[in-house]
Length: 403
Image 1 (tube, rainbow, N blue to C red):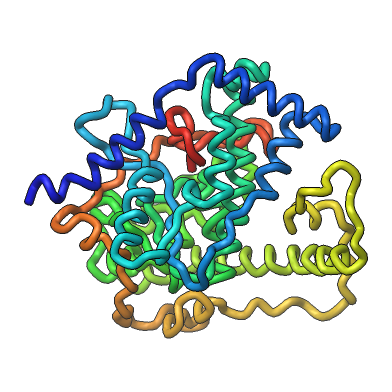
Image 2 (spheres, rainbow, N blue to C red; image 1 turned 60 degrees about the vertical axis):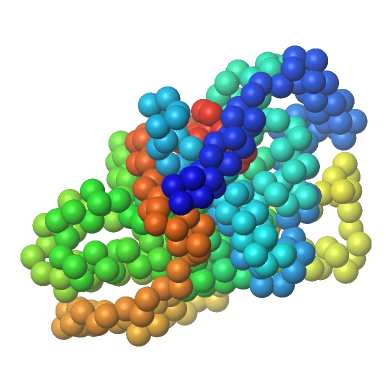
């Protein structure tokens, strides 16, 4: 029984060890030279070419309603050094394989899609590839992050079934929190986002059972994080401030009702930001449709499709007609039906939440509870340039998307 329980972990470790192996120098140089030649032929910088290439790769789900695995950071393991974790990327890969063994074509993960495999063949995290491209470590990591972020955004957009997230406390600088979850909340709804890992005991310590239950609900977890932004050096990530839940302040509140209201207030801020993002992207999507009808092709990017976000940044928005002051209606019902906060008289009494659908953790590893390692604190970058975003925890070691 012990051997059977540990098999998925061992298989994931084997995948990580293979991924950690450096490429032969000749192979790394060949890949880098092919990237440079392709970029020059397209009339682009290496950064532009690689990111545009990632945006055009195929991450569509081959079947409607497939479960899609997402991941961030990892879990400790005694076979690894103290400064390493077993990346959730490889746990998601093994879980997906096992799910598909039980029901063929039921589950997918990013690195296993055709686009994920193609981008993986560039080995953007490999040291020798980076050196041959004449990038220092920060520049190479930033390029890899941008490329995998672009691919991941499209992967989330193409998700129409349940999202299974291999993560514990999500770091606000991670691709999972900043890019994937906002897209998933808009496309499939927070009720279809499930977490494979529990929140840590340290996070829940000191909270009454009602607050522990609410904070552990996957719909809430898909909105909040616990890393405070630096007021002296505000981060560029738009969701960092909106989704921050101060645990010390939360635990200082005297009643479960007050704690409930504080948690839901953060969820409300994030939901309103989701709505603003959707409104920003809508004109861009209309422009994409118009461009397709007119068959207009931008020079040098015939094979690439710009994202909605990039177009919205380039296209001036039509000013809205003047109207009265905006009415900010509560959005709690949007992401958590049946949960209400009465702003005039205070929060309503605690009502038990319906149990969220469970990720297949019990089937994945019977009797084993995965405990994620806390992500190391990463300060906000001093320069809010998109190519210099703070690296995610796995990026120093991982070979995949390093969220």
